[in-house]
Length: 264
Length: 257
Image 1: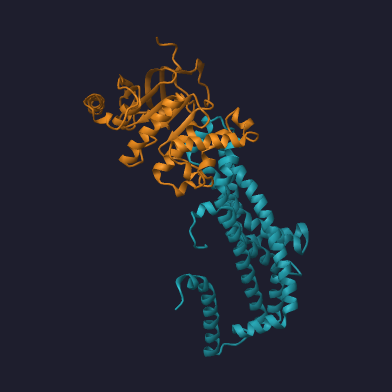
Image 2: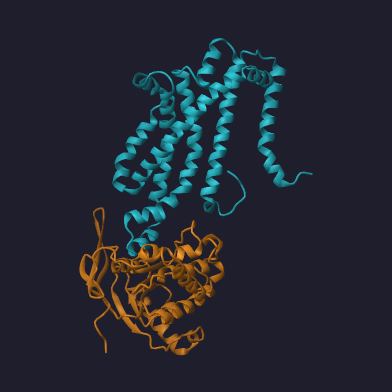
């Protein structure tokens, strides 16, 4: 039943050159991601998870192998991809609403229509803010929000233009445990509603298991995929799910692979 | 009892008046000659006595300073954007700029006089060249230090270089620009007064030079005080603009810098 992959990472390697020294950052990566699939990539720190993300979005060029998105090879920055980082990178001179609407000022066809259909777009942004519980904070500036709220706004900004591909680089990494778990639910709800393809980079195994359809475990540098694990837990998953034995088993299995990687 | 807010507001005035009092007391106690260090009362008397001349010359200085400063803002701002937006221009031009800024500007005035003659133009240009450097450096720094993640977000949305510059670079450079304006405006006064002292028939610098050659030391000090007051006023104007334009950078704090 699997069609052609939406994101196809085919034998990709990347070599960094720093002065005289050559470092192999990632080696022979092969990942196929279906349209609308939510995948997570986990691994020890410094394994090239973020490198993978830059390769997929075309911010870095591959040294070997190729990447295609929707059948088109990636050459140079891929346009219209949504991105959210651990650091929320909201613009302090813009209100929350204006921050969320930033992609609409850049991505076509919204850019062209924004001026004429401003009202409709503001409504759309407000609706999105409402689903993440930020409707009352639309006029506040980012520094007036808590870390969790900033990250909600950040997630809104990354999907406001309905990207087909969303890249998440440890977006909840800097948050406290309670806020983080709360935002897993928010993220899952957004994904179930909008059905974008998502790639989540994280070092939190429970986060990966909660959110993803498939989890890839990467080895330490040079990063390779050493395990691809289907998460067969029905959705919507809840915080209660995370206490079920099956959830625990999956996390445990992932954990063991990470351990073996770290010790080797 | 005065509450703290009023005290904070009154503090600059109290300190200034206190310094003048201290100066007066030192003059009275030591009995120092007027042509060496005139007391503040004598200086203020000179200020009143020579009010028309002072007004005329300080207006001239204010004009040359503001003109030079305005040129500095435009020129420095544009050059800063140019340097900050391109790594190549940055590495190429930066050493030259540092070298140029290391030249004492007073040494430049004779050259300017050869080119433009004595008068207003050398003063404006000196104010310009002395004030534009901090503006260039600050604007360039503001642009060059955009967070890489933010740049990645914009690039993966398909933003052009110009869009990254206008949506992020320029707003982000604003606090840097305004911080530099506060330095630049006071430097501009230094530049124009130096040039007027060396090569002009008008301006506070010229007034002080001719006063000192006739041993009218109270008038020299009156000139100094006037320059200082103009500097403070222009600084306050720069701060006011800074507040209006980049309030977000201060995160709602009350203290004026």
